[in-house]
Image 1 (cartoon, rainbow, N blue to C red):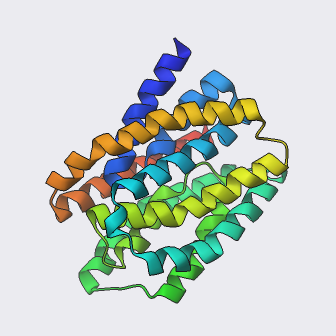
Image 2: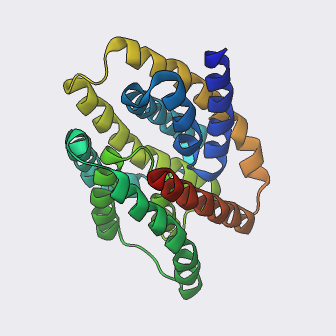
Length: 240
């Protein structure tokens, strides 16, 4: 019964993530912690996130901005490995509170930047990748942080979902590999990640018709709502 609940939540979380580009980890990590415990839940989520991003990139393959992916991944992957290696030595409470506050702050900031016509250059995206990559190595989910920066490249809907997913994929590969080297990702845990990730991948494919019907402004409003939820959830969870 526990597996049925986890897989159903994974399907819903994958669909939600396939629509807005993030939110999968936020929904899925709490039940994983309850069922498998916090020590095993984080590596399982790393494998699941890898599969989720791979499926989103596959769904919107033709709309990927390859230059943006290369610029972001070049710094994000090694930074994520560094973050994962330091995870066992530090308390993440303060970081999660700061990230939650950042999510909330970025809602008005993103709107202001969009109204002013702000755009992002590739070298700036590489700097962003290094910072977010390190944070991704430490905490379970930093998906909402990517949103304003990839939107600043002028990407929306399928182009945003695919480019952000493929760029983030390198981070989760590096994170999973680091967990494996540290002995935190045995084959049994890896297999659980594959099973949960399969449900998430199905959700990513189920999301495509919803995205195709959405207007760009509806897409942005939905992301703002999820960023609000993500920020509030992360702060409350860290302080609980």
